[in-house]
Length: 198
Ligand code: HEM
Ligand code: HEM
Image 1 (cartoon, rainbow, N blue to C red):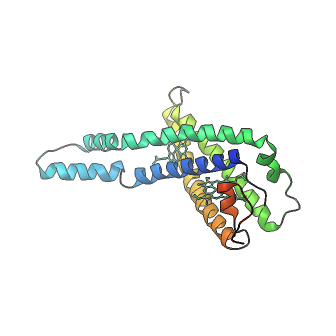
Image 2: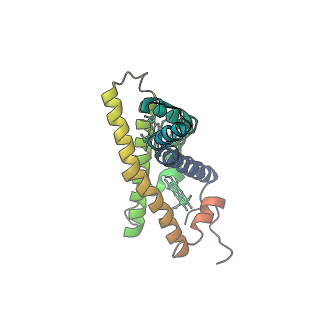
Image 3: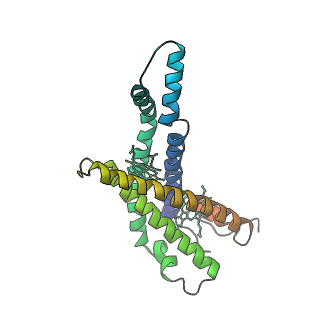
């Protein structure tokens, strides 16, 4: 096992934090801060105190409650964009690309792990580009139909890409840690491969 370099470890944990954060904003948008659920709550609770609001007004209120949370999707989105650029730069250093260049002699399992990382990188790159296109849709002059299609694909790749790969990666790392590669996670934290417990 190669020692993980400090810049690479820093990159990994910042990236993990940002991606999990972005997933958290989606969780909130789809549950506690869903405008559909909350606009019904608003209509119901206001009608209990004899205030009548239209469905449209309730929707605007529910979206206003959601807005400060959703700003974090954009803030973390910029952070992810910076991290992607950083990772591309790291790719040009020896440590950042070695395992993606010479893996023909590796075991089938190692090859699958490497392909899964290539998959994660492709998905993250796609989410970053499509997310920024959505973020700048008015500046780019996108019409409503095209912006809607891009949003649907951005969302689809979240459900069938990010939401599949991230849990698989975490479970895979835990499995490796408790079986043949104990010390893998500490290496990603402290950059040492010598585990005193072994
Ligand atoms: C929070 C729990 C996580 C743990 C314990 C963890 C742990 C690890 C470890 C130990 C490695 C090195 C594996 C190896 O050398 O084969 C690794 C690599 C990697 N992790 Fe994570 N990770 C976590 C979350 C994430 C998240 C949320 C992402 C976001 C997509 C992510 C993306 C990656 C990528 C892309 C690599 C490959 C880096 C490379 O070698 O190019 N990780 N992770
Ligand atoms: C791992 C990375 C990302 C994930 C998992 C993710 C996930 C999602 C999902 C699921 C939606 C649809 C929400 C809905 O309509 O219910 C969405 C919308 C959006 N995302 Fe992302 N996203 C990511 C990265 C980014 C980035 C880097 C940006 C750029 C700033 C971005 C900007 C946006 C924008 C502008 C929308 C449309 C919001 C709207 O129409 O109100 N996303 N994202």
